[in-house]
Amino acid sequence: MTKVNFTEKLSEFSDLWSPKVIAEMNDYQFKLVKIEGEFVWHNHTDTDEAFIVLQGSMFIEMESETVHLNEGEMYVVPKGVDHKPYSLEECKVMLVEPRGVVNTGNVTNDLTSSNDVWI
Amino acid sequence: MTKVNFTEKLSEFSDLWSPKVIAEMNDYQFKLVKIEGEFVWHNHTDTDEAFIVLQGSMFIEMESETVHLNEGEMYVVPKGVDHKPYSLEECKVMLVEPRGVVNTGNVTNDLTSSNDVWI
Image (cartoon, rainbow over all chains, first blue to last red; front, top):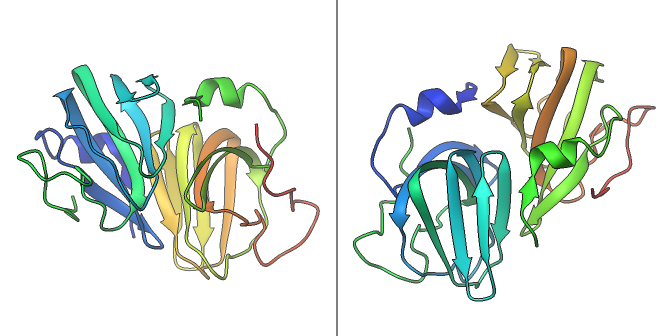
């Protein structure tokens, strides 16, 4: 592989809630996603999911608490835990999760994006 | 878990080449490490290893090439590939790799650090 520059990769897309794969490590993937507004409540039955904020600010609402993440902060949503990501303004996030994870998890709706899209 | 702030965690240690675990995702770990100078040539027989530069600049020397990473850049060293990380000045790095990976891989020397140390 060649090295990955987050700023360069982020400049290559503008669609929201549509994760793009930038690197793989074993059977895990690093994905960049731009978010704004509210996502759908969902969970991932089989895996934890790591959120790392690269720029901006976002929230992860869960039943038990809402986590507020700023740039340079991360949180791992445990597998099976219902969560709803949202942000008030555009936020740039890196996700780390196993290859094959669909963004809306156990839910399929118009926010469900194509999986394994590389940039 | 609670959210992790990289700057806060980085302020909690100063030893070099000694990765500290800050989060787990399934059987993978996120680790922070401060590096300066040259590490030892080594490889990880069973796993890829992801390097994400949070602050500063570092190099990963391999037989085929040397990758230069700056802040906001990442690289995944493939499993089994000999590599020697180094930096000219202190560099702050996040590693992502399976739980149990030892920093010096197939080599044991005075740079081999305790594994699974959380901060």
